[in-house]
Image 1: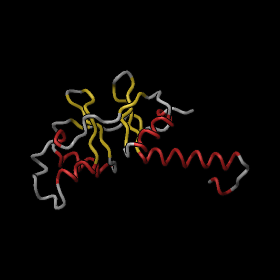
Image 2: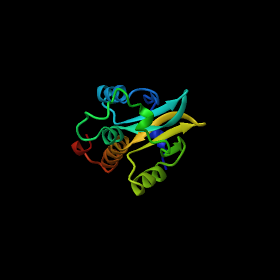
Image 3: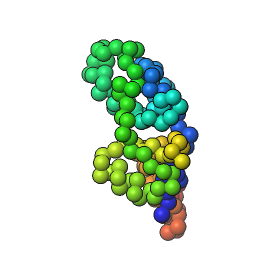
Image 4: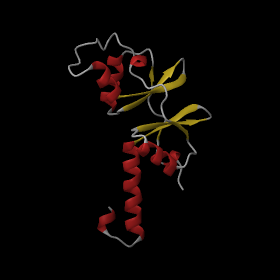
Length: 142
């Protein structure tokens, strides 16, 4: 069984909990990511998603002031965190059962990667293509 490290995004970007929500939102937009690990004093503290920020800001993004709000106001502190050697099927099942969009991946307690639904879809697509190739499929595997 493969482990989560085989499909995670290694060395992900992160943001400090004291950064403004506006800065985090712009960073996520410019890098086309939806999940951002959060650190406090260099230590992993949680995760913030574009959805968390949208919920905090409300439907019109006019109030509260996203420059005044900090990432700590939107972040999830008790984020799902796994070791990079955790079996992939266990991570996927936990995420499905708890309706989670991401998992923080650590090595010896330090951030090593992030695993998202995008990573899961990419990994599953590669798996399917390999299965078709092994079964003698032709152009369908490309």
